[in-house]
Length: 210
Image (cartoon, rainbow, N blue to C red):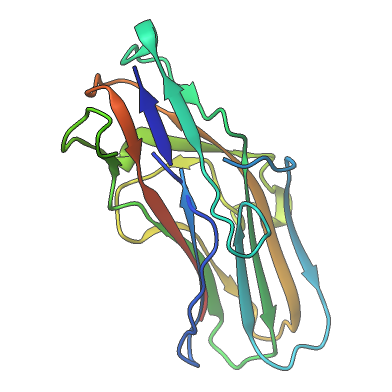
């Protein structure tokens, strides 16, 4: 996320998880445009092994997406929230699940926002760090009915290393593909006057299917 005053949400990375726990890790520099969407779907198809895929922002290998806020002039610290001018962020978690034994196993999405937004060297803000707790989001067109709360709700970064966005227990007898999709619009609270300059930081999302 980048905050300009007169942070960065980042894009895609992966690591191989242990066999008993599947993880997909993606980061976001807090700008990319995406279609407004929210949907949770099930598809009963044969699945030989469990897989989890996480997409944050642009679906292009090596691309890191940025969310940019410009706070200028008399608007600095006014208490009027600033919406990111760089567009919305697309979030998709896809789990492919075979039949498993009891008990029901959870799938979850967490985010690490503990690092904060640090001053970019030479921009004039010194060692100031703006906490990610100043950044919130609206989850556009959330899922309702049977699958309410199975996708990303609107919220605010807590600054924690593992903030839970959702966690759901999946029926062991289900075999197939589960797809959770949201579009997030980010806002900067703008309630504190920080030294002028450019600030940047990264949050990291982790999807898990246990």
